[in-house]
Length: 383
Image 1 (cartoon, rainbow, N blue to C red):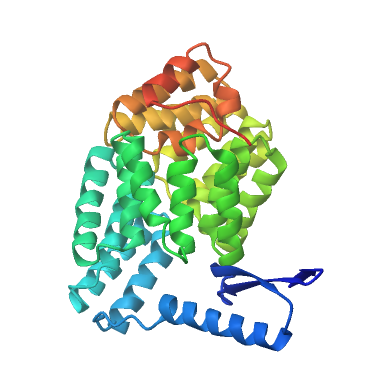
Image 2: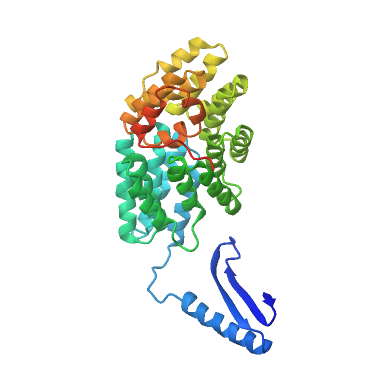
């Protein structure tokens, strides 16, 4: 409340106590002739606004099946382990949730998320993202306003179809609700802002996410990616170390920590981190490439060559392995060439997890501008 002379200004706000989300505000300017009359007038105005805005929704709502919801929550716990076994358990939980409640939309979003996450295993984008789109569309049939489903459609439009305008529309819808779930904000940061090079905003979103859920290892991992893209070496390493402290079985956290340590010359530490990742997820093309590079840098060339000679499911997996290997070995021109090969195979996560975090190294290659054009991207904005 402020006043000047006989004028009074009152600003009323409604804040969601659980997450600090700003829900509503209004400003009232009045002449201060009768303070009590002003109080009554403003109280009545606020009550009227709140009645209109927050009156109970009379639309019929479906009853939540608590066992189906519990199975959905357990899926997230397993999914974010990012190991072959945890990914299998994630899918089983979602299938159980759908069996318990076939009309429940969130498990279908979970299946979309599950299929998108299979890229860590090297599943080709053509396979996993097309299946993810089917499940996201099914979720929207059941609940057209479901923000998580719109976010999934945004991921698919951007990373797979490279239709960034359509991706923007989907994420705008996902982010338009008055209280955006932290997981939706995380997807927005990692799979939209990050690939578009809006890494300063990606960082701000992840910091906001961690205010809501400070014990999520995946959120610290995504924050590390944004911090590395901003050139904040120490802060990025701290974020990735925090992710594996929260979950020592978090293979992708160990992998990114190893790659980060490698590109900054911490080869002995990088090898230890990469060995941990390999123990947890020995079939991931990212992990294989990161470990091969760390072995090469510490003098174990025979084992590095043996890892690189192992058969992989398809050419996109080979490309990703070679990107990680050459990146951590310092062969920037080769890393850029192999990113182009991964892009030719529509390997969707390339821009989020290989291009942006290591852009300051990759951009030294003469082939860099052509690669960005191939990906339909611009240089990162580090505001």
